[in-house]
Length: 132
Image (cartoon, rainbow, N blue to C red; front, top):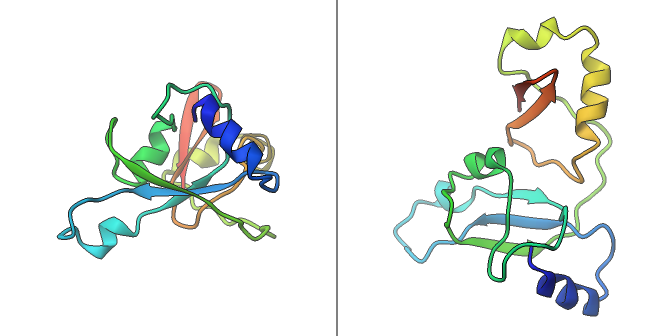
């Protein structure tokens, strides 16, 4: 997000961590409801984007069928704390990881929140493993 967003959000005295729901923004009323309902959730890594832009990881854009330059609707969201997460690896390659529990614990520390149905790309030794 741009630095101006931090200024505005700070003046609103939002609770920490700042979490957001984002999804495609459509002008076209003819889009079907499935396309309109694709959302994900995230925190903010840093406030250094160019004014009028946000930067997000490619995997998140793919989850919402977004292309670079697409408009998104970004809303502050208060999310319930999770108690557990169940992930389904996309391939059997995941079973080759010597200690998958430790890998998941390390990889998931970089996420401030998770969204049901999202596909995550988790790094391990120069390779990414898809899980949803």
